[in-house]
Length: 288
Image 1 (tube, one colour):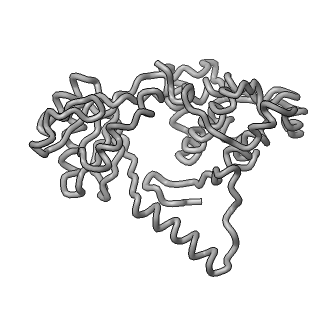
Image 2 (image 1 turned 90 degrees about the vertical axis):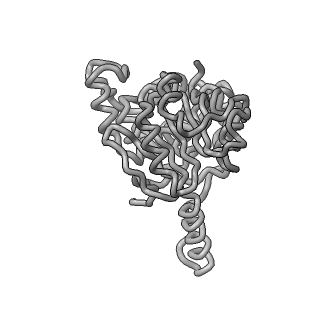
Image 3 (image 1 turned 180 degrees about the vertical axis):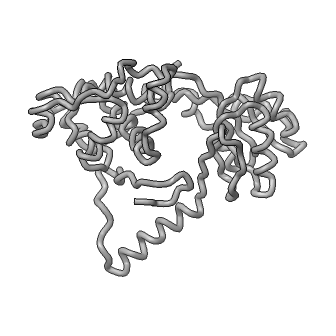
């Protein structure tokens, strides 16, 4: 299986530097003392207890930034870039180099004197810590406009997240193929998810149906839920939930527009359209 990073091409700052010009001079930290690896003697195998403990210790905001670093590094790898300095990678990801080095220290990565970071090695380390070395089957519940778009999106399989099940309550949709998969009734969620070993459930239903759908997904052994419904779901401690509230995101954008209009301090600059990564809590609220 090809994981999230292998098929993702992203334009980033330093693109010409990595291909057409000499890479930027490494920072003092990189040219004097390499960052020590935090290996705990077990490498990066997520099946080893010490490695799992290290993964659990990574702050939520750092996990989000690791995903951004992976996206940028994948684009660099596709362009043939073999190594990258912390300044170049930080600028492309929209963070400062000190924060980047701190984030990478959580996964035990280190810079090489006079070189920086090896792109291929760093990709492998981030993929392992994010659990992208295993296959994640996805089920989408609610085949309305949003669910239909998600079911038809061709980017998921190539990134390690194949959609293997679709569910809805509308009798006119049951059995109809969407994105090559027939739609099942929501009454079959637990059985189908168990049979197809679904690990991630996407809820794109009206708010009133979300909790009942969530309960059925949990019954079917689903470990992670991506919730687009504007409700707070109640789940066991063993189930992870990520909430995507588009209205909240629009309100945040509205805040930035209003702040600029009022002449307040400008927002941090973007790097080739990539905004700095904000530290957010589990509910999507900016916390720092």
